Length: 195
Length: 81
Image (cartoon, rainbow over all chains, first blue to last red; front, side, top):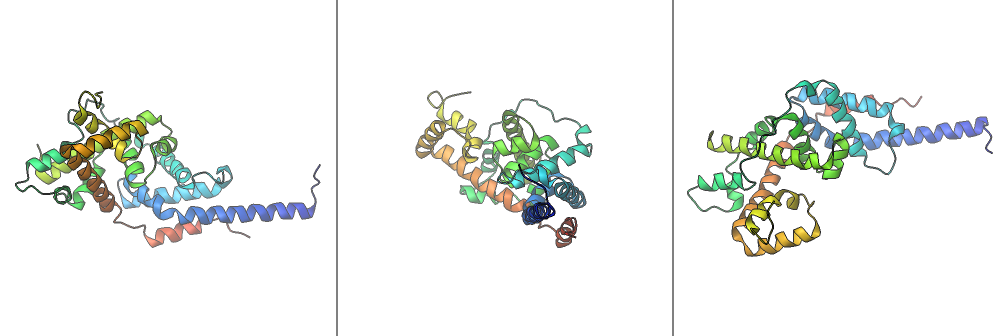
């Protein structure tokens, strides 16, 4: 049986302080990557900055609940998405689940149809503008956008995205599918004008 | 849901997203690759989607985190003493 002495207490406190410092350093090292996702989950840079500060304040307070060796970036983003939901954003309209009429080749087909030259795939993409991507992404309904941002920008797997958002993996897949479709429709509208 | 045996181009279109996300099963991936090797129609569309994903990622990551925010996050750390 272990006995608590001033020396063992001091050693325990020193170990805890060292683990906390390491955790905080690791979390801060991921801040750029977390921000990249946060910036596209919310509408403005100011909101993203507030959300980042709330996220890191909570993460530093509850660092003991992080299990070392697991995915710290996913853990931080889970806090961030929960805080974002807590802000009442989900009171907004739930996106419609009307059937998707067009297939996944839709954007290529539209761009190719409108193109007089037989350009290669890279040239077809060049018909889109970077600004149009940013505005198209911001027009994707929140529930769909969360998944698109985590997978396409955050580079998370379907399983990680499911864990971060606390939704089944099948829901990740369907929201991703719909979100990407909406994104492509908006991009087509911006590139070619409304259908 | 169609199958590669019934309508390979339709099935290839259905599995485009999980294929590029590397979330497709090994057997489905092999069937898709086999079809893509033969079908230039689908191959062009897969290549386009790859370029499109890179383009989207480059477009949206252009804005870096403000350095002042990074400094504010560092200030949230627990003081050692």
